[in-house]
Figure 1 (cartoon, rainbow, N blue to C red):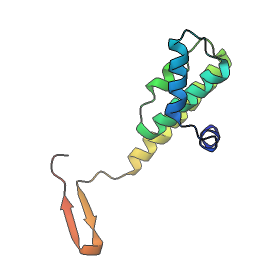
Figure 2: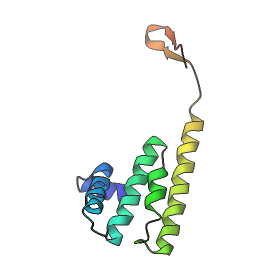
Figure 3: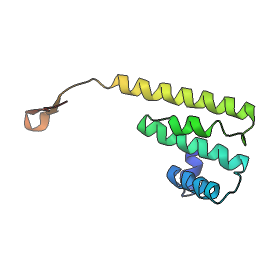
Figure 4: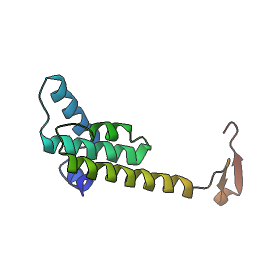
Length: 110
């Protein structure tokens, strides 16, 4: 839901993280909602890259109530699991098949 809301508002996950970083560097304490949105943005990026370290780090911010931190940690774990499952579902191969031209290309160096 968060991701769809971001996209409908024309805001990308990196934009949200950048705004949080700028506010932090200016010495502003993040609002709880902004901090939580930052974690969700980092989760969205992690869901694409497989790197959830930033999300984990942001989820420990003391400006986020403990119960919300727990919920965010559970969300991060769930997204990590989904990413891992997707990776395992892709068969490892070192060839690419181009059936429309009856060609198989072997990839060297993988």
